[in-house]
Amino acid sequence: MKRLENKTAIITGSGAGIGKEIAIAYAKEGANVVSADFNEEALQSTVNEVTESGFSAFGVKVNVANEEDVQKMVTSTIEHFGRIDILVNNAGVGDNMQAAANVEDDIWNRVMNINVTGVMRCIRQVLPHFEKNGSGTIINMASLSGVMGGRGGLTYTAAKHAVVGMTKNVASHYGPLGIRSNAIAPGHVETGFAAAMDNVDPFGMKQATRGVGMMTRAGQVSDISNIALFLASEESSLINGIVVTADGGWSAY
Figure 1 (cartoon, rainbow, N blue to C red):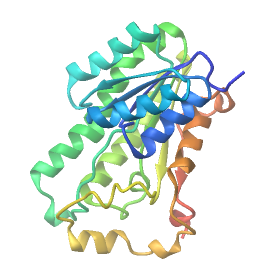
Figure 2: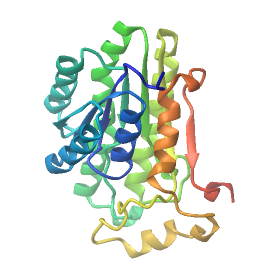
Figure 3: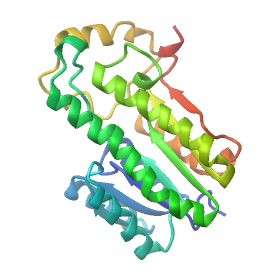
Figure 4: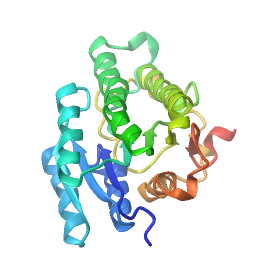
């Protein structure tokens, strides 16, 4: 039996990068995959890759910061597959590495709306279904910036610390109901995420990347999807409320 046989998983931000790799990994292990992304063309590419390989998937365009979009995502999943078992909150945006003195209000608001409010909205919408099932798994994509102080811009760091806090809070409150909530905190992963940032704050970038040479290597998307697969499977049934740091030892120095 496959590790996620008969499970249904929503993966936000799964049009590319880590989210896409998680969607493919889950599908190969038997899950019904819902690819949710703001970029409709990208999410359809993920769906096509999954279904053309003989697995089950459909896509839904969603802005996780928009309550109606999130409600539609969850409703569509129930209509399509009849249940939800796994939520991966992977959608997120960067802050151009802005240091505290250089934070722009529009960047702050955008990052918080997507990286924090979006995570909350998705969790809020799936929890009633998990409670009805008597089980459910939430995997939040945090960051090394969520467990350290100086590895990102101020806004991104604050947002990812909030994600870590939500992860632990949900684990504590809903663990007795059979619901697990864990997070992954990647260091540098080769996804193009950093390269996509424009108007990068030179000071913030310089300060945040001190010691980057201490990493043994950059991560690959498969490194993170393997962790996400483990956390979604029954193999991790005793694990709840933890943050898995995947940074090649960068945070150990």
